[in-house]
Image (cartoon, rainbow, N blue to C red; front, side, top):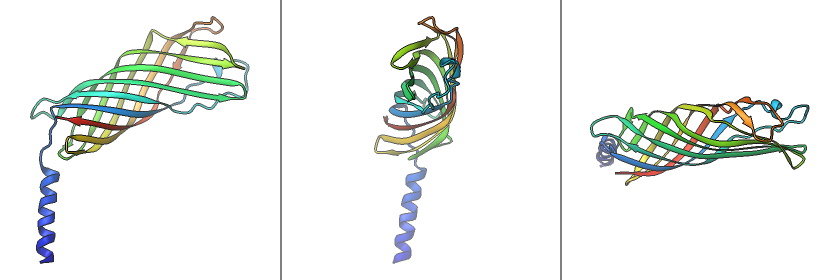
Length: 204
């Protein structure tokens, strides 16, 4: 009897895992971290105790459309991220938004999903500030921001809801960033780094 019950559970579980659960449309909220390592020395010239940068973090949203019987999905990603780090009277602030084209490929797309995901930045906005003893000494923005990311996403589908995570690398560069205060010359600021996101959404 125990063997029969175990066999039945195995068959049912296998059927659930292998059953197709392809969503034509996905909408999901994300919370992510980007472990940027920008060189802050040019933003605080002559200073020795430069702040240690923590990862930028924030909320976002993805919308993905997957044609029937096709493992590739197309969509749009929006992110609103920021960071605030300080040390010995010096403060570094960064805030930005990013809208990107999204492309994913599901190696597994049943009740579980797994596969690579890439994004390419279409629109960016934001500013990077340097503050010394409560006085803003630099405020950088750029019209030449570029970005792309390569990662792996995985998760589970629970009665229409999707829960998962994504991790990878994002190349994120602010070229010819201009200081609105006029204190510092134009600079190239590299905000690239590894990233991780948690995902919560639904599919139909």
